[in-house]
Length: 211
Image 1 (cartoon, helix red, strand yellow):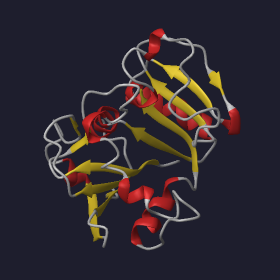
Image 2 (cartoon, helix red, strand yellow):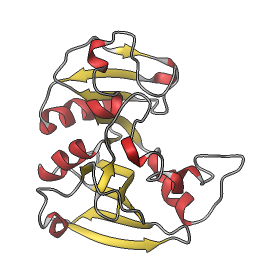
Image 3 (tube, helix red, strand yellow):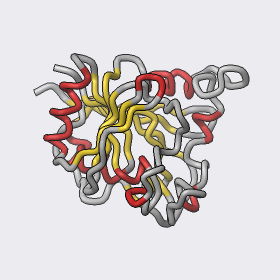
C-alpha cells in the first residue's frame, strides 16, 4: 500500500499555516513568504545559490516516490478563481508537481493538462474518496497531501496521514488559518521527532505508529 505523505508544511509559532486575506497578489495573505524563507534559502529550492545542511536535507524529501498530489481549492487559486476559466494555478505553464494533481473543490471543471506531466483534476470528494482516486493514479507510488491547512487538517482528522514533515517557523502571525484546530491529541497516533536548524526553524516529523 502506498503511503500518504506531507512535506515542507510550515506553520507559525501560534499554529497558522497561512495569513489573511488571500488574493491573487498575496497567496499567503499578510504572512507573505515569511513561512517559507527557510526553504527558499536551500539548495533544493535554489540550486545555484541555496545552501546545504539540515533544511536542505528535509526539503529535498518533498518529491521522491510521489505519484500524485491532493490539494485544496485555496492552494490552487485565490477566492473567485472558479469563475475565471483562464485561471490555471499560481505556477505558470509547467507547475512543479509533475504528477496528477487532485484539487478538492465544490465547483466542477474539466481536467487541465499542462507541461511537465502535470494534470489537474477537480474533485468534489471526501478525504477517503479523494485518497482512493489519487492512489489509483499514483500507480503504486505515494500520495502527497499538499495543503492548504484545511485539507491537511481534514486528512489528519480522518486518520489518513502516514508521514508528516512539519516546520515550525519562529514568527507570530496572529491571524489566518490554523492547522491544529479540532485535532486534540492527534499526536498520540504518531511517533514524533524534532530537529532544530541553525536557520531558526524546527523540523517535526510525525510517523504513524504501527498497529
